[in-house]
Length: 186
Image (tube, rainbow, N blue to C red):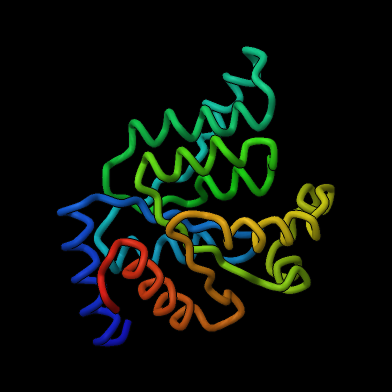
């Protein structure tokens, strides 16, 4: 981390402890969400919470909830339990991108739970190279990639970061995005 990134991270951390925010990292499978979450957690001294919890979602699905409802309800329950300031590995934007019928409720959840979002934008061809997940190929990835970009334009406190850069450059851009989202001048 550069000295400028370190100084910005210190200011973000101070701001997030005064007025807690959660920074959700969203994007396609293979975009680098978990990698960025770990780097942000280290830089900001915050815990990483992987959302939504698959066990909670499975329980809700077994109780008859639709896939989108189960994802959103699982996310909401987890956010209630999560620390007020945290890094979220996925978040409400991911739910809305995968389950478009949940857009309004997911957006409301993002606002009410003070979630700032960093969307990792990566060409689909590069995401496929990074992630060797046969199950991921079953979904319509092009449509999902398009939905992420469309939603980011209408989503509260969201910044798009080019994930094809080096991990250090992605972290720097994500810190600037997080600063902007929580009201700290970069």
